Image (cartoon, rainbow, N blue to C red; front, side):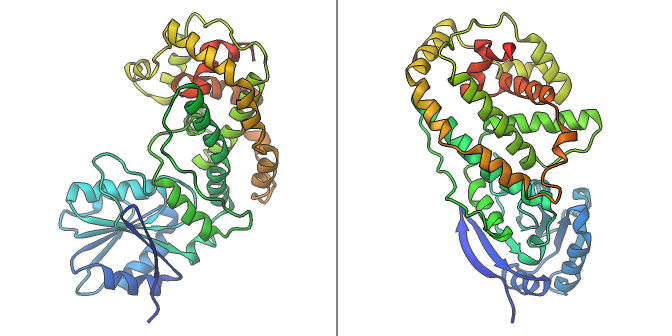
Length: 364
């Protein structure tokens, strides 16, 4: 009997890999005890979810398939999601409310949030990687996943900065190397590994969310967060190199950040009091202390950053798309990217935040 093979336990979640609805149905039958099962799916995966529901449903496991969380009844005994990040979050939230177990068929390598430990949310008991789904996902999904992976060197650099300049203790382990010719299935699995340690947003993620909110507000097509993340990482890395290349980086502190905070409030809808809470301006002593330490490590940081070949990464990332990334020309301008980075710096951290405090971006 064809089944999915158990691959590994990642932070308490069992990962299974296989191919096709029939093998998944057989595996589910051996894992899930009797009771009502709800299948919650992303809209574009309705056909797959309904095929799975029909194959799996029997007297022992009555199954409801739906794309609406509100339709999952209170007598449900297990929830299975079919999709990516949004579906995983919805499944975990509803399972938490009902006090039951849940699982996910991870349909495309788009996100590094699937296994993230969110406060008061139950974890996924199982994640299933169906190569029939993942191997045929849209190119933009692959670009999103690779965007996250290719952004990791910037996160490593920011960890190095925090350790040297802010005396931070870095506990996160970077994802192991992923070969450029890795399959979509390998990419999805690596993102699961990465998601376990994804407890706080790095600066590229902060900027990616600003870009997403900007596109949504303007009524233009939004992209996947991983796509925005790679674009953001590339822009931030360029800013870091420009800043660290300057022998004089002790600019004066700007007199006010109110205008940027007001723009963030209107753009994201986040309450002003929360933005003000996040905006913890350096004290004079703290600012000058960081400036002194930063000047001591400036060349070390610059060497570390130049060791990251973002030019090759950008070329590799663009070629994932059928149009080799031509869509980027109509999606962004230099001004829009610099504005997004400036706003992100207000609620970011580490070097990006310090650059904003120094006034360097105001001259850009």
